[in-house]
Amino acid sequence: MKPYSVLLAYPSETFNGQTQTYFKHIESTNSRCAVDAVQKLAAMANHGNYEPEDFEPLLCIEGHHDNLL
Image (cartoon, rainbow, N blue to C red; front, side, top):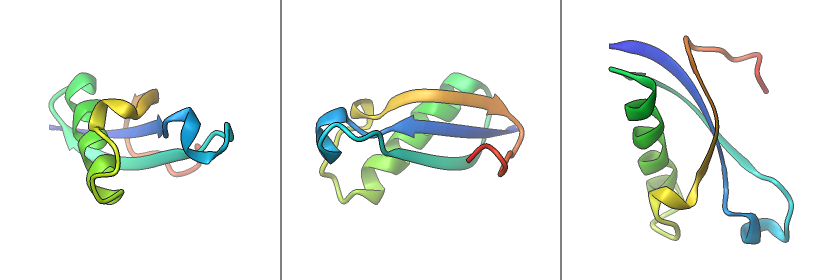
């Protein structure tokens, strides 16, 4: 397991065209699994109002990085 920092975009129609993001640190075996896991977390955090694939990946990098935002 490796640490990853993942940044996702909410669906564009959600905030009147304004870009809103969801950022999470996660431990995962690879970057694809990290993105998949964070998409699921984002959907759960929004009480099932979205499907995981509704969140578009913007960035996934190895390591826990707080200074990205």
